[in-house]
Amino acid sequence: MKIEDVVCSFCGCLCDDLVVEVEGTRVISVENGCTLASEKFLGDHRLKTPIRRDGNSWTKISYDEAIAETAEILLDADRPLLYGWSGTFGEAQSVGVHLAEILGAVIDNTSTVCHGPSILAIQEVGHPGCTLGQVKNRADVVVYWGANPVDAHPRHMSRYTTYCDGFFRKDAFKDRKVIVVDVRDTESSILADEFVKVNPGGDYAVLSALRAIVRGKRGIIPPEVEGVSREQLFRVADICMSAKFGAVFFGVGLTMAPGKNKNIRNAIEFTEELSRHTKFTISPMRGHWNVYGSNEVFTWISGYPYAVDFARGIAFYNPGETTSVDILKRGECDACLVVASDPGAHFPKECAEHLARIPTVQIDPHVNVTTHLSRIQIPVAVAGIDAEGTAYRMDGVPIRTRKLFQGQYPDDFEVLEKIYAIVKEAKG
Amino acid sequence: MKFLLNTGRTIRQGSFVERKNSPSYQTAAATIFMNPVDMLEIMVEEGDHVRVRSDVGEVVMQVSPDVGLPRWRVFVSLGPYSNHIVSAETHGTGMPDFKVTPVSIEPTDDPVLPVGTLMGLCGGVPYED
Image (tube, rainbow over all chains, first blue to last red; front, top):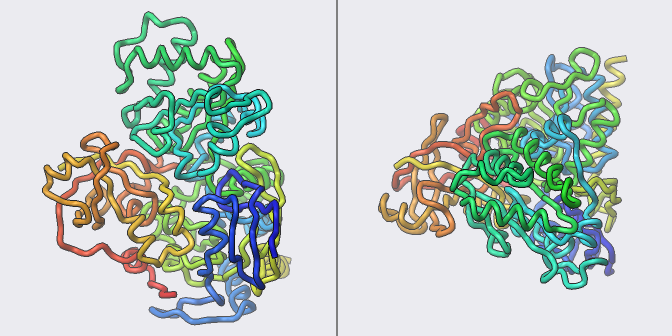
């Protein structure tokens, strides 16, 4: 059976034009998808049953046992951490926040190691953004700063920018200028009309120089700023100022580099400077397919987008203190529930060591790096393949992912609801 | 020799995220890209193993040339190998310094460890699927 308009649940692009052929409970072909989508839909490498670590070996256990033991671990903990959430759908994320509240836990999502600094900057100076549809139809200048879409968001350029014709951009490839700013040559920088190669950690200074140029202060710019010549800075500023509609997309090359949230603040203020001359917008290249959704759901319920600490009985938010890496580094949490993410792979070693010391439970369809650090793993259905739910695209547009077939696994929502019910009963 | 380590996403790493016990993922996540002139300086060829050390740890990876990298700068895909040597210090931001870790690199004959074994060093118990 061929199913059209399938939503891809891999990256923040949430491409919704895939054609997927299903035979029984297997996907046998994918059209329109990128390499990442094909691997995701055609992959058949699920963990088959819940597993529990017993000493130095692993045992298969039932779902009921796994769920009961998970609830017990969370109830026994003084300072549980509930981490992940970006690889699942909004309905499950919602149960997660309620579970955190009733436990007095910290709940954090993967923004903490991707666009958390962007959120901090946006809370300081706002977010002059727009939807990807606006970019597709209007933008004649696109800037990718600290982002490598060819590798991380492979269809971003073909669906929204370089290779995609729009309502006011009938010949996009010729009409649009693409500027890439990065510390190294990438597959994306090869495609740029202008590649700006910045010294590592030099983004803040280059953004400040560009702001000064846009403000009319060309005379104060030195011959070189962090590896970028004055001439190229003038050229980039001129391209941007002569745009009819410009769009800046920034990646973790900016949020993780020295300066972090201050880099993003400077990039937003650069965008605002440009909007004194023309129309410019700025948006983060969100990584996980529903990381934006985790920020939305956390905010609806708690008022804060990530790193929410319920230990005081109310929601408390202080990134740097209530963020997962800091909590694990301090050895503060005494249990961890990981849902739909892989901190074992993506957190520094000190954090992985603490995850191995405490009872860590993972809810995830696949064996990943965190599996080796866990006490229990509960496999679940994959949202967008055998589970459905609401996700948010990188520009904040909600899109409903679809269930392509009825599989044998419960979904995140069902498993979390059962854990919540046990905890609720115990807490009274 | 001293280098500055940058980490980030690659399409090969992304392709194998649901098979993290596989040799393909290990290759994608444990390859360190280096300017070919730097490879000459430390006398390694493509596929050779190197020991990468930072202030917080060390890990063995295989080396691959990348002419797009400036000298004295190396790149590794994000994942358990790069994170074995990245500090958890966040400077009050919640975000570690994934882009600028000073490291030293030297040739070695030691093997690149499988993901499960690497997590075993962190206190975990490898799960073979």
